[in-house]
Structures are given as C-alpha cells and as structure tokens.
Image (cartoon, rainbow, N blue to C red; front, side):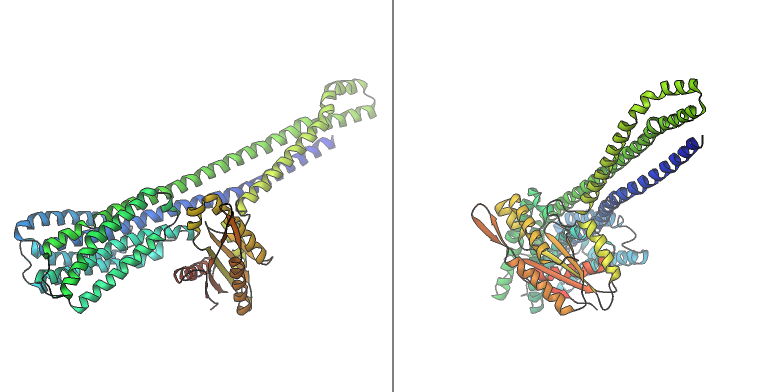
Length: 562
C-alpha cells in the first residue's frame, strides 16, 4: 500500500509544480499584452489631454481675429462684431475650463485668466467706440496678442513635460501642434498691418521685419506638415483639405498682405481699409479650424483603433491561457485515472500473487486488463500534448520578440536587451544608441508601391544585420526606423563604426519596378552615455536624427557621452 500513498503524494507535488510553471508561463505571456494595452490606452488619454490644450490655442487665435474686427469696425457694424466676439469668448472659456489640472496649476490657471480678462477689458472699450486713435487701437490689438503668447508660454512648456507617447507616435502629435501653431502664426501676420491700415501710414521697418518673421514661421509649419507620416497617407480627405487650405490662404490672405506691403514700399495709398481687411483676412483663415478638427478627429480614431486592437490581443491571450490551464488540468486528471490508477491496481495484483489470494488476483485482473492495455497509448498521447505545448511556447516567444517582415528584433525585445546594456554601462564602457531612418521612404512606396517598400525594408535589414557585430542589439523600432545599441569605450572607434554603417547603406542597390535599381541613403542620430536610462538616450538620439534629416539627410549627427 506504500506505493499508492507515494504515487498520490508525487501526483499532488507534480500537479502543484505543473500549475505553478503554467502560471509563470501564463503571466509572462500576459504581461506583454497588458503592457501593450496600457501603452495604447495611455497614448489615447495623453492625446485627449493634448487635444484639449490645442483647442484652446485655436480658440484664442479665433477670438483675437474677432477682437480685431470689433476694434476696427465702423459704428454701423459694431453690434454684429460684438455678438461674434461674445460667441468666440464663450467657446474659449468653455474649452479653457476643460484643460486637465495637471497641465495648469491653480495659480497658473488664474494668471492665464487674469491676463485674458485684462486684454478683453481693453478690447471692450471698442464696443461702441471707433478706433480713431491708432496708438490706442494698436495697444488693444497687442494686448490680445500678449494674452495668446502668455498662454503658449505657460501651457506648451507644461505640455512637453506630460506628453509621453511612444517615439513612433510623437510625429502625429507634433504635426497636430504644427497645425495649431500655423493658425496662430497666420493670425499674428494679419494683426501686424491693421494699425497702419487704420492710420493710413506706411509700414515701419519693425513691422516689415515682423511680417518677414511671420512668413518664415508659416513656411516652417507648412514644411512640417508636408513631411507627414502614415496617419496622413491613409486619409486622402485630410491631404486634399490641407492643400485646399494652403491655396485659399495664399490666394486670399497672403496675397492681400503682400499687396499692402508693395503699396507701402511704393508710397501709394492702401487699396483697402482696416475694417474690410480684418474681415477679408479672417475669412481666408476659416478653413484652418476645420483642417485642425479633421486631423484631430482622424488621429483620435487612429489611437482608439490601436487601443481596441491591443484589447482584442489581450483578450485573445487570456483565452489562450485559460485553454492552457484547462489542458493542463485535463492532462493531470487523465494521468491519474488512465495511468496511475492501472499501475496501482497492477501493484495490488502483484501483492495478490505473492500472497496466493487467487480470487483477489482474478477480480483485479478482470477489472484492470483494459486499462493496462491502454497505459502505453495514454503515455504516448501525453507526450504528444507536451510537445504541442513546447511548440506553442516557442512560437509565442518568437512572435513576441521578432519583427515578422525583417526578422530583426521588434521594439519589445529591443527595449529589454538594450535596457540591460544600459544598466551595465559605465564610464569606461558607455552605451551608444544609433537611430537610423531610411531617407525618402514614403517616396519609394508612392513610386513603386508598398511591395517594393517591403522589399527595401528586407534588403536594408539584411545589410544592417551583416555590417553590425554579433553582440550588438539591432532592431526595427518603427516603420522605416531602425536602431543599433552597443557598448564601446573608444568614441572615435564607435563613430567610425557608425560611418561604416552609413557607407554600407549607400552601396546597397535594390531592384525595383522590373529593371530599375534603387540606391538607398539613410540619416543617423547618435547619443551615448553611462549614467542615463535607455529612454533618455533614445530621446537624445532622436533629436540628433531630427537634426540629420533637417540638415539634408544622408548624414550623421551625434552627441557623445557626458
């Protein structure tokens, strides 16, 4: 009977151990899915907060335009201009009250409101008063500009501290901010000529310089929007609206200002009055609000879809884990009833033979014969199930660490391995982070199609894997963005290594479109250090990559350890 108690004890121990190992394996798989869902949800929450911040910036620009119309309007138009301004102020105040407290402390919110109230009081004097004094009118216009600038300085400085999206997701948010900055810059451009028009005096040198800086700022924002990403490529409506908005502004707004500049420089009389200009110029900006709303709506839909996708993946993983638990418990039950029980009965038969109790032997033999014959087939089935579980584990691990297109490490595996290297880095062996971005990759997709783009990514990855060393962490962390992380004590040798990478990329020829050959270039951003976390080094390398792309591409910008 000792065999029965031993087998039972071993069965319980084995079951507990199996369930413990299954639990560890389950949570290892679930943790990655939970982390991905948390990141997607955090991205959506952060974007919602950023959206509220940007709407207030847009509201202030619109209110400033209505305030200018009120200041410069004639007496018979004052009532309509005042009504429009009140509606605009109501929108501003409503959206300002929706900004999360983490962006504006109570003191900073009060300071913003006080600045805005004081500016509005200056404008309110023109509810029934015409702008006969140019200096007073300029003061009222400048007060509203000052309120807008105060908001930007107070809030967007805070925004940068709280927006913590994935590097691949920062581009869409920066382009959304560029849309808001573009609306503000175009409004300031029109404000620069209002008082000269009202007083019918030529533009001063300072006002000319102000217009020149305004044109440069606007052109910079257009450039940022033209270097758009996949979130714009997938939405033809926004691209069409973007072009339409730019054409309308340049045809109706910018042309009007340039015409006034020429008249001022030539000493000619202005062809339009300040009140008419304010209305016409404001009309040229109306599509900007719609453009921003379309972009933010589409962008939120994109983040919502990503969160839903992550949730579906999480639920799928938990369903698989539940099935795995059921499988393990079923296997244990099967072993107990179809394997261990026949063995125990065989042991009793053996004791019966030894004791000579034939009746007991015959009874046990008749009850156990079928189960004994099934013993080996049951063991074979159990081995097959265990083999399936091992294959499932290997498949899950591979899918969780490898990019399916390029076979390089994916972002999750990259962050783990590169994070381990960052912990090991020291003053003599600092960590080097190299971010690589394929130049003009969008043009490749647009010209030869996405299959050609995929072929470029595969060939690029193969070349990168060949030129990099065995111990380096090489990964694809975005669409056409790659990363190489390593430790090296000699900065000159590390930089030479980076230049060797970019040189190998320049000599990579890829056949596309039948008989055509494409030669690639790439931009590299490098950062290094030994007392910084991996996210800090990635952020610094990303800034250097941004410099490389803005300074002409096909080059390296770097920041060494300090």
